[in-house]
Length: 467
Image (tube, rainbow, N blue to C red):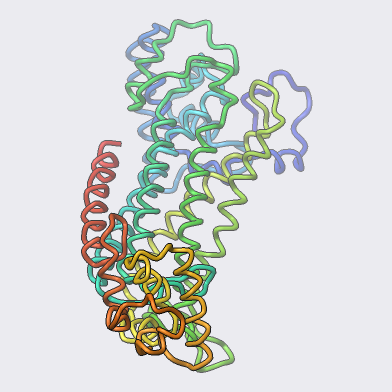
């Protein structure tokens, strides 16, 4: 098939080169956005008097027919067409005749693809934020439901202090709230128009680029044509938001994988969100969480992949930039699917509340910090209290006794500063309820956290509805 740039060449493209350089096999996903951009460009051409009004109407009708072809799957997308821009133009020209050749007036595939990808990014952000806000809502609901469910809190994967399950779940909800804000920031960055920048230097025609931007729902135009066609910062922003989100999903997955193990036994996975073993009949595996955790590697790689492509490129456009789409499409698909699947996984599983509570209550030394605070309230410097309780902990481990079960006589062996009835002040429930400072793990604080999350979620959804 004749190339749009074939006039300069005397020989046809080598089939191997054609196969190596084509992008239509993956950039066909931009077709709807390419048509959207072309419809706006037609109106810009009409206003610039480069198209007669009747020609503009004919091109619009033709592009709408191409869009219907796309929707019905009848738009030709073979590799000889090179890229989606050429595919749309060829289909249009077949419908409207030579007039189709006027559509490309004043634009290059350089500014065209940059526009298409920005339009796609806005769509991808909406998808991700929609899935993410649903996950936040699930986590917030579970946090409120489990505000009084006791469990051990961990540092270094070692039991540290008692917390509530609601507090733990709320922590992830706050992480994902920040992630959604990052996506919305990426949307704002994508909200500027490259079209009208031409190949690199702008165009000789008097285009009303603000009109084009308005027709596409974009808030501004990019001021420098070199920057407009060669910069991919907005895609890096999107990939960075996706990477941080997938990292948080991976951390949540790791917790769930541990909790699903026999050693923890804190959750029971729903059969619909677990898999088995082809050899071992007893197995119930957390494959969903494991895959979400594993896919973090791909999403991270996409961010670093694009950064690597960009790092040595001179201005302006270089064909290396064709590679940006693989990274963007894959991360968009992966993070949105992961957010949706995780919401289903969490909604379907059951928390083993009694087992969680027993793990906290039966731990010999989980209340060590609370015991040190008893001394602090008696005027003992914390460092001295820490040292005293450290010796008490050693004693408990040797004797196999819980801190809250020690008698006054036993405690007085380590210090006569322990007040009478100290052990009666120690319990997992008391420890959790005492954490009243803002941000603490008490049920009351979890309620406040969920209230804050609900407000933030409302703001994010309102922003998303206006995109």
